[in-house]
Amino acid sequence: MTLEFLGVGSAFAKKHYQNNLLINGNILIDCGASAGRSLYDTKRSFKDIDHIFITHTHADHIGGLEECAFLNRFFFRGRKPKLYLPHELFDTLWKNSLRGGLEDIDSGKMELDGYFDVVEATNSFKIEGTQFEIIPTFHVPKKFCCGLMIDNRILFSGDTQFMPSLVRGYGSTAEAIFHDCQFFKGGIHASLDELASLPKEIRKKIYLMHYPDDHGNFRSQAKKAGVRWAEQHKVYKFG
Image (cartoon, rainbow, N blue to C red; front, side):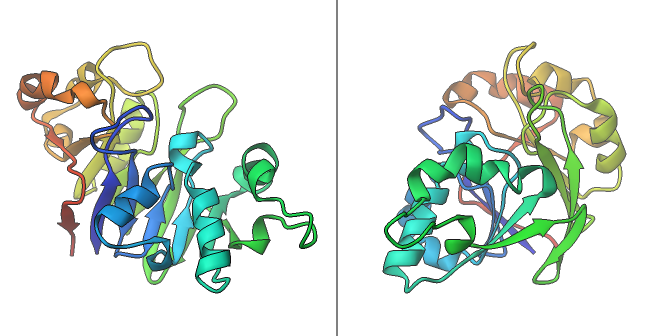
């Protein structure tokens, strides 16, 4: 199994794009506004993406879906990537986020399944032999968000506030933990200080992701905590 981040940045990051993860070259976890540009930078396109899973509906995680949909429909002969959605997002992604741009009255009432092969993701599901377990997280009140346990090896936090019991529980058996972070307390992501409070055996598995452009100012703090940084376009191999 290979993991490659199309971006490792926060919603507002410009240097390393938004935090979207590519698995085995064709499974995309979240599709932010910078996903298409990142693929272009590495001589790829949305034509290379066969499967997409969405963790929640913030724009840095879904902002590239319209581009993906239109490119596949009009330039790639109407191909339909599989779009995996947790039950909580099955209706709201279209009605609250994508309908305004993608609805096409002239060709009939084009809905989400006009562009994607939409699959309701159960709590545990497989994509091309890779096992995924959905882990609900707490990001902002009254908005569904989730992380993933991937092949019982990789904990991917998605976007979440600090949930120490979750990280300890799933992280105890994980080979690696990719966790979002911010550099102050009280926001909607786990802070570096909070992650540094975890046991050493957990911290040594952590790769920080979803970080802002000024992350270089916090390298000594991260080194002291014993955590690493996820890197854009670096290919991580497991198994």
